[in-house]
Amino acid sequence: MTMKWAAVAMAGILLGSSFAGSAKADGVLDEVKKRGQLVVGNKTDFAPFGALNASGEPAGFEIDLARDVAKRLGVELKIVPVVSANRMQFLQQGKIDLMIATMSYRPERAEAVEVVQPAYYASAQSLLAPKNASPKLTAWEDLRDKKVCGVQGAFYNADVAAFGAQIVNFKDTTEALNGLKDGKCVGMAFDITFFAGKLQEPEWAAYELPLPSRNDDPWVLAVKKGETAFHEYMVGVVKDWHKTGKLIELEGTWKLPASSFLKAQKEKNS
Image (tube, rainbow, N blue to C red; front, side, top):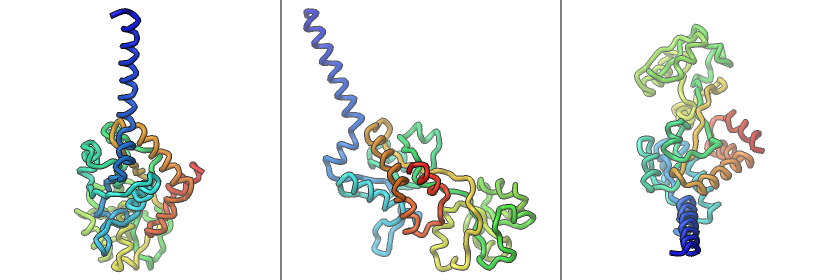
């Protein structure tokens, strides 16, 4: 082979490699557009973020986010139910294109999948208490020397105890809620997203979240590792959700407690 032809061949190999790399990076986004359908992994057992409505159809805060992404892409939406144990595996195995499933950011998760930042929501520590509590609780410092129901092993217990509260531990959320009902404590400390669902049930109409939330734990979307184009696209989508107030609007639609995290993100991205 002459030097001239060797150079041409090498150029062809490099060009081919470039196209192959581009195709790999753009794979899922291109495939979604070609098939005319976006497959999203959502939870369907965690109201009001994702659950089955009276008609048996998925509905919730995160379901609406999935619908918005499909609308932006001009494609139909297919929802695949996922749980915490399989949501990342479904992405890695190509069973879903995008995951919107209450996943908190963790460095080890960012190694396994392509997480999208900024975060679109955040869970946080909160306190569920009776509306007719006397004296009224207005600050975490008000819990000093008072009994607070907690779930054994929960991260929140130590933080609440630091305010001088006496933690009454229960083995699970059901027992802790019963303890609150039975008057064994002035309130129950746990995750605000858990309380958000409970407060939509008639049984808890006489309760509220009187204190500002603490210890934000940001939730992130994710795509398959290496899907650079789709990842960049979703970064832009999440920023736009914050900028336009879409997330705060959905927060109201699904009657979620007002989030200081979303308010701060809207100001940051506006």
